[in-house]
Amino acid sequence: METLTVTEEVLQLVTFTLENEEYGVDILKVQEINRMTEITRVPNSAAYVEGVINLRGKVIPVINLRKRFGLTEVHTDESSRVIIMDIRGVTMGLVVDSVSEVLRIPSGIVEPTPPMASDINTEFIKGVAKLEDRLIILLDIDKLIGKTESTGMNESTTAVDVKKTVDG
Image (tube, rainbow, N blue to C red):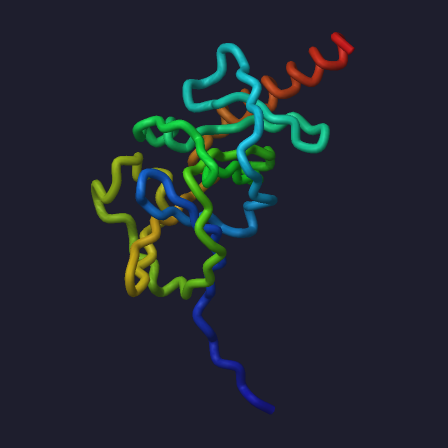
């Protein structure tokens, strides 16, 4: 009987761009990737919350990652996408400049986040993957949205659902 050797863990990522930087998120958190759609603004929501979308009858909050990271705002275009993800048990959309690819990388090429490696707050960053020709910033998507924020988003989408029910 053959003995199995311990193999290095392989990370599966969905990679996307924001302001010429490439980011990666765990593929298991991603439910789907959609083209930009009409986003309904929700009053009194956080500045980085674009609003909500109707996804097959379900109201989903949408976050603009450029705003969340304090990057320059740009108009969405043909390559802009909304990544539908499960963040702390809440389905949310993230607006990104473009989605690059699905990538499988060995966990050994991921280095800890160097101090001041990016304009974004490093608490969201798991590490940086070093590929031959590029670096990919790995995001900890659960830390991107605080627990209180995700609860608030649940309440805001519930309020929209209730309003729809009441209004017909």
